[in-house]
Length: 342
Image (cartoon, rainbow, N blue to C red; front, side, top):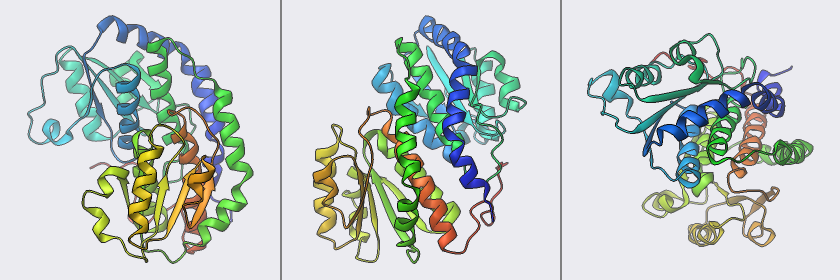
C-alpha cells in the first residue's frame, strides 16, 4: 500500500527549490518594503503546524533582524473583538490552506489598520492570498493530501528564513539543505528500525532548546496526529521547571541537541533526566553527547537556523514509520481534517 505522507515527505527538497525559484523575487520585494517601514515589533499568527513555524520565525527574526516577535492571540480578534493597536509594527500570518479563520481575521484587521502585513500559504486561490495579494508568499509545495503536514512545514520555515535572509542581505544556499536531506533519506531504513522500537509507547516527551524548541513542538504534534501518542513538546529549560516530576522509566524522552551554543544546557538537562530513570533518545551531531543516550541518531553539523529542517525531516520519517508499525494509516488520522474551520 502506498501512503501520501511518505510521498509528500520525499517531495520536500523539490518544494523548497520551487519556493526559491518562483518566490525569490517577490520575497526580495517584501524585504525592501519591510526595511523601508523599519518596524520595531512583529506579530505572528498561525495554528497547529503553522504556529510552530511562527515560533521558528520568532527565533529567526529576533536573532537576525533584532526586533521582538509576539504570537497573536486569535481570540482577541475573533471573539473578544479587542485587537491590539499595532504602531510601527508588522504582521505575519502562516496558513497552509490560507483559510484558517482566525489567522485570516488577524490579517484582515491588521491591513485595515494600515499595518504592513504579509502571509505565507500553499494555496494561491485562498482567502489569505486574495486578501494580501502581492504580500502573499506561496510555499510552492504542491497539493498536500495527507492530513499531517510535512513538506508544508518545511516550506513554511523556508519561507520565513528566505525573508529574514533577504532583509539582512543574505542568501540561502540550497545545497546546505540538500546535503542534509540526502543524508537523512539515505538512512530511512535505520529510522524505520528505530521507530519500531517505540511501537508500544503511549506517552512521550520531546525537548529542544532555542531554534530546536519549535521543532520539538512540531514533533510532538506529528506523533499525536499519526500515532495517537500522548506526546509533549517542551523546551529543555521548561522540563526542569515542573514537568520533570512526571517522568518515570515508562516515558521515553527524545532530546534534540545539535552542537550549537545550547549544547552545554542540553547536557545538564540530560543529566537531570537520567536521575529519573527515563529512557532517552538523543538526536545530535556531537559524538560525545550521543553517547549519553540509551539510543541515538546522528545528524550532520550545520548552521543553527538550519538544524530544524534536518530534525523535522527525521521526525516526519520517524512518525510515519511508527504509525505503520502500530497498524495505523498516517494519511487519515481519526477525527481530523486537512482544513480546520474552528
